Length: 308
Image (cartoon, rainbow, N blue to C red; front, side, top):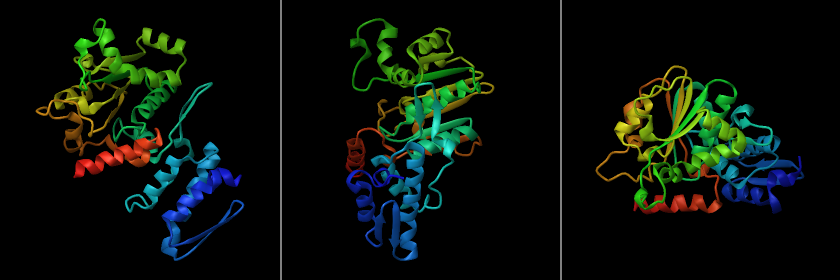
């Protein structure tokens, strides 16, 4: 193993680990690592290095956000006993020219929970890959013939802007709300394939309101931006689930655009549905951010501001 793949350019990863764990002495010769210190102090950095080696074996590199996620897990009492996942948890869906991998432990939890539960809520801040991962899981289910179609929905709620000012007919007005779902699909399917599947209604991308009255059998349903669905709309969406169907609900409870008098269905769901077997809640945090490195800092700054 090339040391630069493990330690980062100019040993940047190694330096971060040394700074994070000053109570131990870490030395590296080639790819050989020695950690000296008290047993309880050595445990966390040792597990981080082992996970980094797995990442290099699987992906050929360790990214900054990978290391941040490992720090978060290693230092968290709730998860310190389990920081590794099966190797097949990384690759979500693979095509001839594109492979989607789970890049953080939060995304890996989404993959694992979707395998054992029919409804999964993925709740977390911007940039954690909730939508992208959910779409990849749905495409993988369709490719494996576990489901016959994919239905992706979003509430058409105005975020400080008015639909009325957008040009075109209703379909053109709601297109900007659905565009992120199209963008994710276009990474995983060729333009020709996506066009064919949408024309045949094997893949449907619709405003949430259009799902009322339907029963969706053999389907994979994704409700994106679910923080902007009311409690009634959330109930309506979840009860569309038919035979042999699954659903992933994604959202960020810090970005609710509903009127202040209206309760978000995403914030009330954990309490209402907590005792139902087959429904799982996955909470992502800033350690799962996979966008520009500033996004994590932005999320953190807003968290601090809101607490004040």
